[in-house]
Image 1 (cartoon, helix red, strand yellow):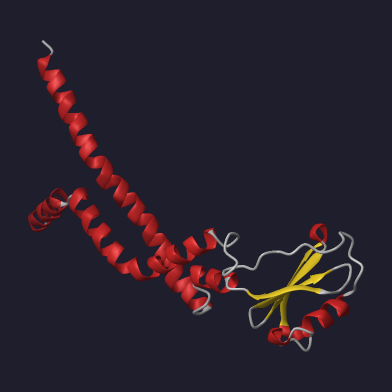
Image 2 (cartoon, one colour):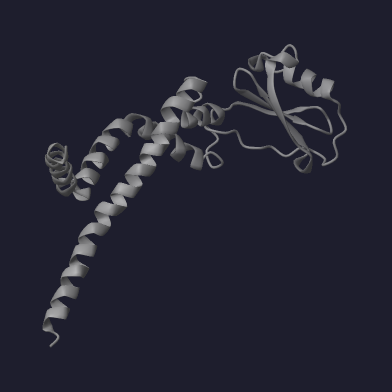
Length: 194
C-alpha cells in the first residue's frame, strides 16, 4: 500500500516544487487585466468626469443662490414652480425624483425623473434656473447600476475585486526584482566577511 502512494507523493512534490509565484503572478496579472479592461475603462472615464462635476456646468448645473436664507414657500409652491418649466415635464410629485433643499443658499434643487433640474427660490417661489443634469447618469455608469442591479453586483463588484488582485500581483511583480537585488547584495556582503 505504501509503495503505491510513494510515487503519487513524489508527483505532488514535483508539482509543488515547479510552482513559481513569479510565473503565477504574471499570468494572473495578464489575464485579470484582459478580463476587466472594458468595465474598468468605463469606471475610470466616468470617475474622471465625476471628479470635475462641480467645475463643469455640462455635467452638473451651477447652483444659483436665492434671495433670502429663510424658506417661506411650501411644497406645493415648489411643485407649481417646477411644473411651470415645460422641459421638466412635471405634472405631479410622481414626476419628481428628489428635492435637494439648501436653506443656507435660499433655494431648492428639484431633480425630475427626465434628468432635468429646476432650481426654485425658497423665499419667492421663482424659478432661478433649469438645466439638464448629467451627473446622476454618469454616477450610474460609474457603479454599473445603469445596466441593472445584477450588472452592478455580478459585473462591477467582481471587476473591483479583480482590480484589487491586480494591485497585489502588480506590487509583487514590482517588489520582486528589488528583493532579488537585496538578497544578492546581502550574499555578496556575507561572502566578503572573513
